[in-house]
Image (spheres, rainbow, N blue to C red):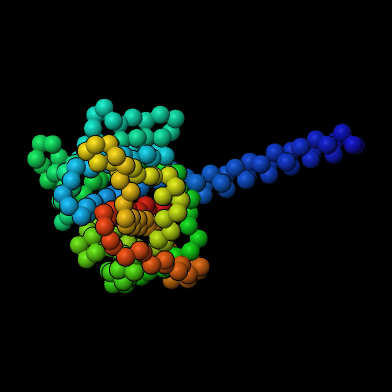
Length: 230
């Protein structure tokens, strides 16, 4: 009898471990980080090398990173771009081609946030205008964000929306250097990352309190992106 009880306890423990694994795996499924874009606003025109260190796999990147500076090792991806950055945000590559920002998307493991908002289809645009202003995006940056994300939110009658960027920023980091290789630390760095998933009118969520961004001063970098959880 004692032997049978021991076997049953082992079976129960194994079942509990499997359930825990499945729960954690579901909460940390690989998600696509859609359209992170990075704007640079130096105080004066200067050459800047941007290095991305990502816990995940890059998919589409524009402009293309330096071919000898893009590699994936042990689940991490590193890539870099060298551009001439102007105070108005215009970025120019070595060929003279101009870009408003650096763009990439990737597949990475991201948890499901708990706090956020439930937004109806008709509220999507005014909601985004209000929240993005609170998070520090300029009208131009917010317009870029809204024209990309509002159609995705409006594809559902109701959508859960969260602006918790903590998990994302732990998995995607940037480094900046000047033409001499000296490190540049942005005086202001604003990072906005949104998570959305389908909801309904009765979906209960913990209301999210947004943290005001620092005032823009000196060399400023701004990034926005997001993911849609299915």
